[in-house]
Length: 225
Length: 225
Image (cartoon, rainbow over all chains, first blue to last red; front, side, top):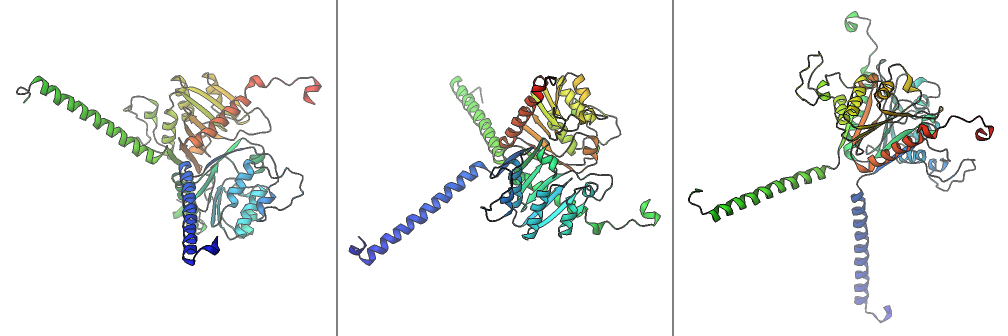
């Protein structure tokens, strides 16, 4: 067919084909956008306890990593969804958590730090030193951790902000008991009206608990009066 | 002017006036609906600790109730907003809370029960008997309370559903320390995609912890094997 066509005709056909292709792709894009917009921003609710399954594949970029562990494989659970959301961070992770002793969640945070994601952690003063706490491991790796400065107050939040636009919040402390035994909830959302206040709260707590602003108490009676 | 008009003309003017009035009201309604729709369903975030203020006016239908207490009056706080949302219940309140010792929150629940609102509470087995727990007071008033049946598990949720369409959830236990001292968060939303899963979770927990389904353990070895 092409042999019988003049060069001009061939260019016309190719040109029309290209235009049709571009229009097709654009229409598809438009349709996808419309469908996504009609659903609105991400809103997901996870309930715990979560059954124990293998999550090794989430820690490697090679998705077909073979794992010989005895746990069930390739099963999606509330915990694997939570891990996936955390590991989706590309720029930053702001974490505000009362109690943090879960080994796999700690491994995820360390991995993000290693990947160059800017991780900031605010935690409770008392709970950061309990047995099994992962706060020491995070600090050792160079992650900046601040704790509630007041002795009389608990920093009881359990929320995280992924890249400043995905909020993960709920009743779940980052412990094995919370994940595997307790009745807990976690909400994941990109709804700006919900994300914004948590971002502001994180920044407020981050600044309020800056050790630079908390100088050792003076021995001068005047200040302590 | 009306004296110079014929009856027919007068009816025309009145008719046109009525049509204009109805159209005006309808347009206003349409505009209000459009404005509300553009903002989407209710989304509110409350942070704690909340300063102590007088909330007496929230417990009475007469909004100008005079109160002589020494606390600041007519100041809106995170706690007064939380109370307002709870007291807005007209039909039902489903509450799933780990620890409940806050006197004013207990008073709000008892008031709702007295008003005929159907209140259902699911709580933790261990924490419902600690000093100051309000669970006994609720049960005494005739409110149906169920607790986590398993001894090894904590019912760690802190959420409430008002009239099955408003979700109140976060890190806040219903205690005085949580409200007045701790760093806590509560989210209030009518977003159906978020409300629905919590409704289903409540129903699941309500049925799972029905005492009728938990008969005393048999002494027959076969059942316990």
